Length: 164
Image 1 (cartoon, rainbow, N blue to C red):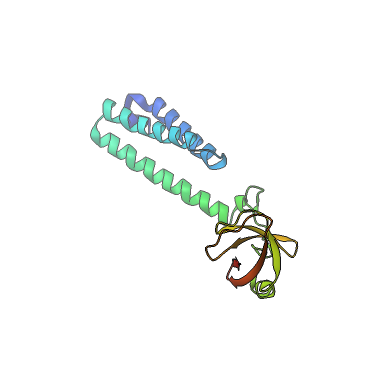
Image 2 (cartoon, rainbow, N blue to C red):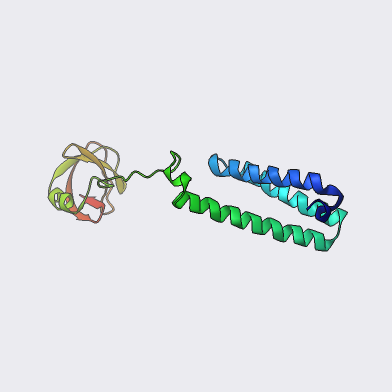
């Protein structure tokens, strides 16, 4: 492998290892891609070194090898997340959340029609009202309602609660 990379074999190998390390760091840290960008720049440096030191053919071969190795690494990493050791680690959330995502479900929505409550915020036309001790997002039919005013649930359509 050293002869294929020419006189820049050691810097190319170091750049490759640094690039792989930066991609691994990018996968495990939140942020906006600094480590991934450094990994990409490291791989670009390998290609430029090969282009300048050897030939266009050597740069194309190195590019093809880098793309192939990255594809294999990504496939193995994704497979490990799905079925391997990473799927059983603490970084993968496997707990299921049970329950409704909203205080208004189909049965509760029909129970709300006709109930009265109080506007917590200004309804212009949407805002928050407290109905039966539960704060929820509500909408009017285009009317402005001041905070503290009494509201009556007129209709429930899906997750939308309409008051007047």
